[in-house]
Image 1: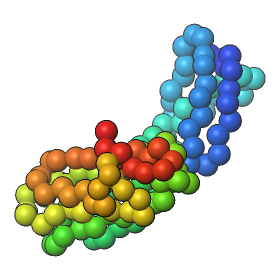
Image 2: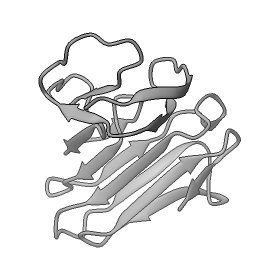
Image 3: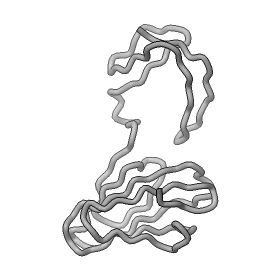
Image 4: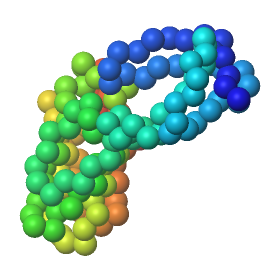
Length: 140
């Protein structure tokens, strides 16, 4: 059964949308019949994953197409460059080093990260969750 939306706040590309519902919500890869107020989460649309996941092996600049970034520094050090915090309030990245080598993953950007110019991940499976407050980046 589909639920109807009580309130809806629109969102632009790369931004979040908030919808409050009452009753069950359908999650399916099969589009339901069109119903006014129906909510459908398309789980089959690979072009817009819920959390965009990518594995990188070279220097990478993050943007709206990234959410979860797995860093494989087996071949050498990797630099992950963040976008400007000012134009991306609320943007969140999960950055994880997945290889066992001593090659570091260095995260930097135009603003500070927890008051520092860079954040370095040197140990396999360590992760940084980084969020923009509109002024700088914070590790959560």
